[in-house]
Every structure is written in structure tokens, then in C-alpha cells.
Image (cartoon, rainbow, N blue to C red; front, side):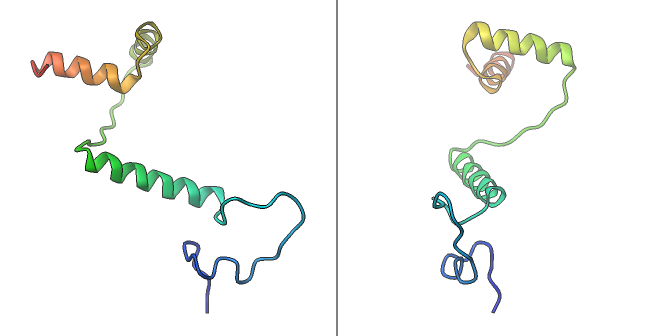
Length: 90
């Protein structure tokens, strides 16, 4: 019988208890990050959001970061607002 990383019933079957602070989560950091990212994608999908990846010149990104600081907004919020105005959606 093998232990699967996401198997909650056999996670501690072969684990040795070491000294130190007890772990609050039985999974390693990489697996926790994958699970959290999966949950985030599902939440975004339920909200009707889609992922978009673009490549932009460094000068534009720096100007965008400056605008983020001035407006106290995130990059995504500024880009979404600009696209909506450009597309006459809002």
C-alpha cells in the first residue's frame, strides 16, 4: 500500500515524529501552494473571471507600478479599468 501525498487517511502512516514544534498542516509547502492555487482558480472561475497573460515592456510596467502607488490600486485593477474605458464598457 502506497501513501498518496493528498491522502488524508494515511498521511501519518509512515511518518516519524521528530522533536520541535508540531506541524499545523501535514502537507509540505509545495503541495499546500498547489492546493491553494487550485482553490484560487476555482473561486475566480466561479466569479466568472479568466486568466490573461501578456508581455509588456519594462518601461510600461514601471509606469504602471508608479500609477499603482499613486492610486493605491493593484495592477490588475488599473488594467481592467483602462480596458473597460477603452472598450466603452464602463
